[in-house]
Image 1 (tube, one colour):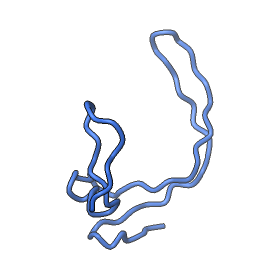
Image 2 (cartoon, rainbow, N blue to C red):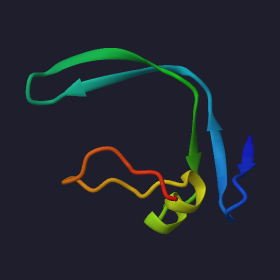
Image 3 (cartoon, rainbow, N blue to C red):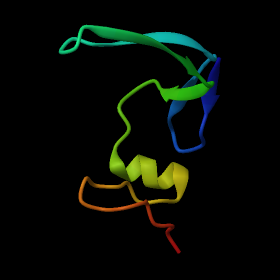
Image 4 (cartoon, rainbow, N blue to C red):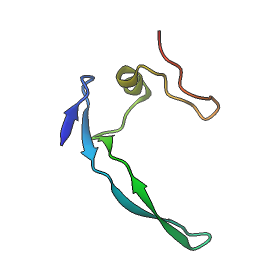
Length: 69
């Protein structure tokens, strides 16, 4: 299912489900339940992210995103 965000991008709805994660270093694997989410059909730039969410993207040296006024 595609969703138009109004900012010129399309999103694909990904249904909930289970995925198996693994750590090659420890050779361990485990299952994780995923909630439904939406994935852009193309790479999201920082500008597009801000247009859609109203928040500036977080850089590795920042804390939580801040709301734009």
